[in-house]
Image (tube, rainbow, N blue to C red):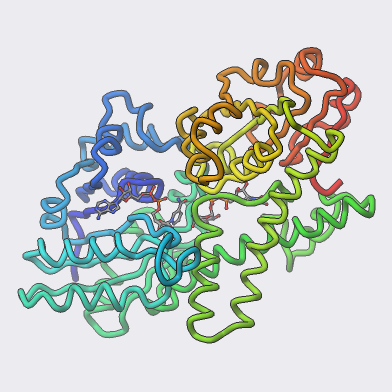
Length: 464
Ligand code: NAD
Ligand code: UGA
């Protein structure tokens, strides 16, 4: 039986970094090397001040501090790390394609293929290759095809081991996952590879929580898990709009349905819309795959989750305009939060970006405060949309390091991220500094609306 003592992970991003740091922490007998082409990112992971690592996650810098230099290493020498490893994780980005066939729908797998080709070129000893990235079902077929045609006699096993961590809780999710999923071939070599990876996780995860399946079920389950989670959010968000018309309260509805054990209470928080790098990308991928198999109804069914989410983001922005007497031109709107959720500095597909874009189209001026997101990221997010020139984005949006300054002289505040600190602000002080009537649009339903109304704010939540 293969006992793994050396792991390489290609991709030092939001998944590769935290996942492998936890593997290294829990398995001091395994040398873990995380590699990336991005030199700045690797330099940040190696920063002497562990608080400067490039991914903000509660508890992560402590994990890195414990293992880095002991059995956890970050490097740009990809070839060497591959060659030295018995097991190679591929944890590179798989974004939605922006060109050619499948543009805007399918996953762009060019980085996956580059990794497979690099592994094929560099390897001199047998290796287990683990797909950690989220991939369309049957991607392992292409990876295998590349690896099995090197002609150099090296044997590869390809496993699927999708990651289910959520950002902001990554370390907890990795230390104590609901389950780990490993897909491998049914033949003895495949099963031996599966067992080798099971043994790595079994260092800290109870065996009954490590599920093994065939490769295709594993690849597909990842897309389906994200689609189900996102579907719950779009479902409750659709009901939030109905609540606003009927004086029902979406929080009460969510509690009433969520106490049914068959439905369950999680992922029923109505919001300004889900963001993050994966929900939209993975559902689009599922829709694209379904359509490519001619399954039109299946594709349409899942696409509705995205359509509803886009509607929710737009609706939030247009409600602000409507409530500010149908014009926000020249008005200052303060944004509390830019990250796609609390406890992360990640802004990918954040609802805040799209709400800002709508409001800028209406000539609002926006001042943003987010405790973890840097101004250059905010401008990069807006510039990426290409709606207007970078100069106009800079003109329309300013970024503040102080929430009170961000809200001063504003016509309205929009809460875009559910950061805990927003709840405890001195809201009287904020009210005193704003133009009247002072309005709050709570896109996360996190603030104490009763208290705010008592101060004098006009408050609008989602679904109430
Ligand atoms: P990321 O963009 O943060 O990181 C990917 C890294 O891979 C980048 O630093 C990039 O430079 C590097 N890279 C790309 N090609 C490379 C190559 N050929 N050689 C070396 N390095 C290379 O992405 P992420 O958020 O970590 O996501 C990675 C994968 O995990 C995606 O498939 C994603 O869908 C999936 N996933 C993400 C999350 C999440 O919370 N972000 C959760 C579960 C699964
Ligand atoms: C999600 C999944 O939860 C992870 O299991 C998965 O591994 C990951 O995607 C991935 O594949 O990338 P993540 O996007 O990090 O994790 O964060 P979530 O907690 O799922 O939140 C996603 C978005 O939905 C956020 O914008 C959040 O604010 C929003 N959300 C979440 C709601 O609006 N309501 C809810 O009830 C829950």
